[in-house]
Length: 247
Image (tube, rainbow, N blue to C red; front, top):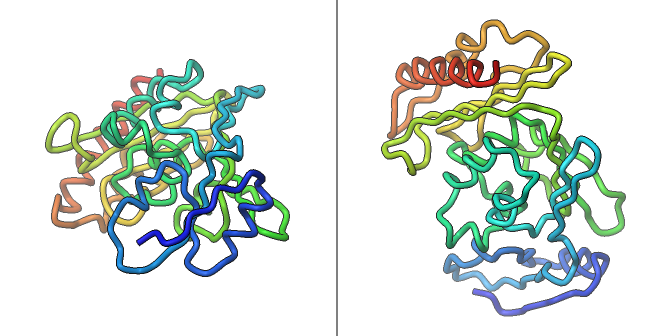
């Protein structure tokens, strides 16, 4: 239950407020809409100008409170990333869910987080009385460190491909693969569909062996939705499709 509401006008004020016990940031509000018996205070981020989408060189700088729909509609958003955004949430939720909030709350079935992991995005986190930290998403997802996400930086000089299999074409994935490839030869393959966060299967300069690496990443992926053997087989196929689409 929300008992106190704050709407700071500066980032410094927001960071100070967030040091108080049981105080959470409020971006799109989708995370805080769930009923809870615990009393919490919220810090509304809407007045902090964190809703920017800027193309800067080979990077796309995305403010923390940008909604999924705003990103999807951006002229700079890669087509494959748009596909993951449409699968991440229906339109009504995309209009309110923020980029930062989606990453904070994501699990292994998040198509958006899977693509972000493949792209090796950078996440800027700020805390009161400390310098801003820049984390690779691979560092961020397992730990979800304390602090306020202020910006997510996506590389635009990488090709991205995404494939998924679900119970229906619009359902959360049972297995999904996201493949990013840079011109200098770097390749990153992320696999999703189970667990607490997507899995990085490949990060190197060689694209050979993607199918095998995809299968290996699913070795312990059994859950109520699918067996590990099924995911090993399907992820290898999806990885191959991703590679073909980038050639």
